[in-house]
Image 1 (cartoon, one colour):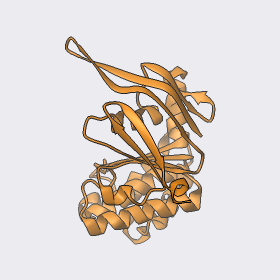
Image 2: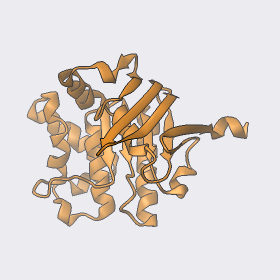
Image 3: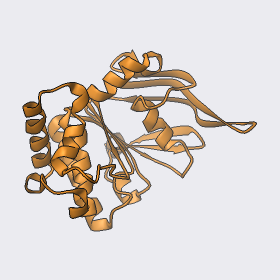
Amino acid sequence: MYELTGVTKRYQRGKATIAALDDVSLTVPTGSRLVIQGPTGGGKSTLLQLLGGLDRATAGSVLLDGTDLSRLSEARLTKLRAERIGFVFQGFHLIPTLTAQENVETALVPLRLKAAARRERAAAALDSVGLAERAGHLPSELSGGQQQRVAIARALAKRPQVLLADEPTGNLDESTRDEVIEVLEKQWKELGLTFIMVTHDSAVARRADRLARIARGRITVTDRAAADD
């Protein structure tokens, strides 16, 4: 479970101080899904970076299962990211000279698995997103939707507890967007992941039971399931 208390993130821009997040408090239960929406520059990606241990809060605490990410050493934070958090981004970030299989295996290198175990996990992850037959293809031989599914497989291969997605359908057309969202939702439900996604797309946001809106660094959360009751 994530527990954020009084989280503020400030950046220095010249002589001005910008508050990307301003006194944010939020709880995300284990196994739940949260979709984050808001205007550009409102703090969405900053929040996701703090949740993923890619940045540190200026003030407040970001707890993942009781561990304050802001207080971990860089070595411990790197280990936690490698073992417990999967990331999916708008840009697929695939290595163009590696096959789909090899791209997925790159996420497993920090776990120090033996080569056979890496191959097995990567193959299983690709199969779970419907790309077993594309394992030997380079990114240039795959469609945009297929490339994003490889990126999802890469995030899932290490068997994380948390999946963070930052605009994962931003580069896709509507039909492909829906396919990718269905893949993400399927993995979330089957694996019991804590799934947090940033999106600009209102059609994607409407699928969520719990929606957080961020504007000017402040957050408002709507629990739609409770509202419907």
